[in-house]
Length: 539
Image 1: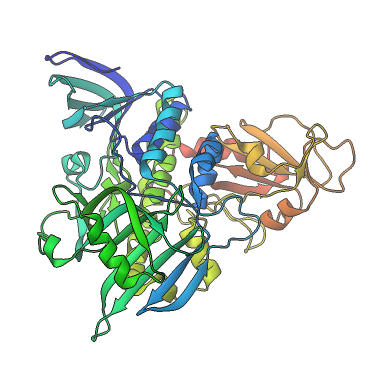
Image 2: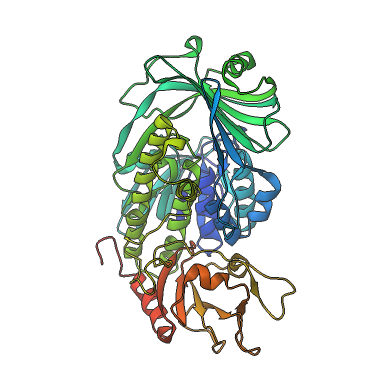
């Protein structure tokens, strides 16, 4: 509900979200589908028509699948099959973005405004509509909530009382500044051009391009990166700014990150770089937009304080290498939202919210460090094997094993343990289902914790542990064994159960606990009860 008028007026909500980009929309969507009341405000009058963040990681698609959004994304996205890397006119690497067959989604590209459209429509369907042209001017918090001061689209003011405030308002975040969080790091000296164009060339469909030139001192003095977008021959291209468009070094005291207004490279500027560096001759046309941007690398000292939190670019910025930024921010959103929903519904205590910083800030630190390395040395020079590199880029290796919510390990050391991603698996059959299912199909739409029971010979179908229950039995279980049958043995191969085994799957798709199934009547309730008591300093 948007306020109109010029006088202060106080309204209340569970959570006020500032910033309606992909991260803020994700927070709103995840809160709304869990029954938490939220308001989502954004200072811009509408979505920006720019293909800024375009890479969609497989882990993000898994999270969207749980929300029921994957179909809409697949209809709008383009596949990313690999990347061609050329240095000084020669191909030095061809990276195939191939993942293990049990991973349900591959890499994709989608313009940011399309990602925002899909999330916006989803959130609106749950009752949360963006309040456009509404800007946060300041806020204060106390033991019972947050009082925020908004400037509305009609020039009036509004005072909002909220239980919690989440800043998803980008690299220049008002929320971060209002909290007094540090934002340590720096900026790359180079400026870049960004353009959304169509290219007529004979490069393979679905492959990106990274072409560079090496200076006499061994540094890179010319660069072209092309990411395929939906549409025939369409690419988001980035490259170094020519001297005529440069404004010189950034002010080291300011956060230099993102698009810079007032300078729009011409198609001829983009074509000139393509002529120098592209591995094949190309004719560019139909430029939809262009801009100049800078790249910073910074991270906050903490992801929140009291009842106020930051997520996405408000918490961490880094090079766009590997398309990690938006996807990391969406995972921030999913991690925070399910915890906020439990707290505002009175099902967990506020101490649970301390786990947001404890789990997500180490991830942010790793992503900032890795993308800076890849931006300066190239991802092809990563010390790890290609399989590990791709799984990490796909964000499938994110784990919270060292976080405060991870239960005790159980079973084989190399099996998925508490804190790890809960793997998807195929080949689950059911007497009523006409075709095999994936585990994601079974979990889709659930908003709370799920008790996943592996009972090789079957077990009673009753709900246990105070949460949704899904039972998986072995492929050769008796015909009357209830549950989903692991016909292909893929669940047993991926989860490595030690006989009858229970798994608690968190709302964000990570494992919360793993235990002998004989403890299923009391282990899940103990886990849920502990959520309200576990904070960042609790073992």
